[in-house]
Length: 326
Image (cartoon, rainbow, N blue to C red):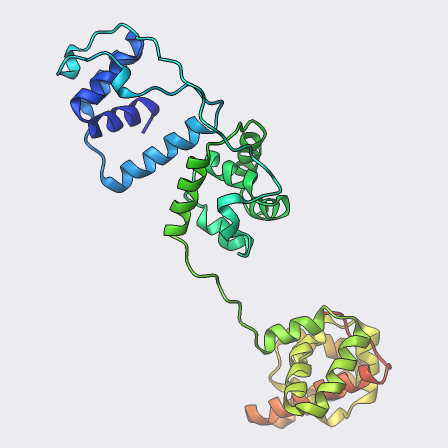
């Protein structure tokens, strides 16, 4: 809905007396537009109305504060909206309400977001208007706000940043309302699980000496886990990541009889990678031996591939080769 349609929907939710008072404060052209929209408008549902009111409060109260007035101070309007005069009445002046300056160093009512992951906050704000996101971003610590905005589309990032730059003081009441609305649909913090893959990722991101030292120490406490982590760090198919010189050293230091069985049912890129590092005569001998093997059991081939991967990791531990990080 456009602005006029939203205004008409809101007026329909008021009683006729209050709606007439509001129309009576508008200039003639705006009042005429509102009356035309009222004829085609329908009363919004409760949830929709709440969202519209919250959006209005964010847009209005995050701009320079205007003097407020009470409905009781307005002149008594006619009973019917259609009979309201078009003259604009002056607003009584009152002291501006207390406002809370936006502070980047304090989250205020949004402190409950500080312990959450930026992805979770971004998911929570995905349905919000850019103006609302700007108000929240201005309240959160800059590092957290930057992490949240980093996951938005570039055009949305620019729009939110522009609104933050032009944001005026925001009434404490509106901040509390936005925070309450977010808490109502807040889900429990996502607990990120551990597991062998996560442990392996920690090792991948550690320096080689530290990785080797941790695995050696783990051998004394949980040898099976240490072996599983080593297998996760390097598998037979990771041969594709090796340079030709490293692969030639591996072929020289491992049993030729294992390779024919290991390559028998390997993917074509892996088989081609290994054979290309062998002299033509040796490569032909490997192919002939693979052809002579006939059908092989998957369990046998898997066991041999694992033996070769174990040998490769031992070569790295000895310092003879260096496997690529990750």
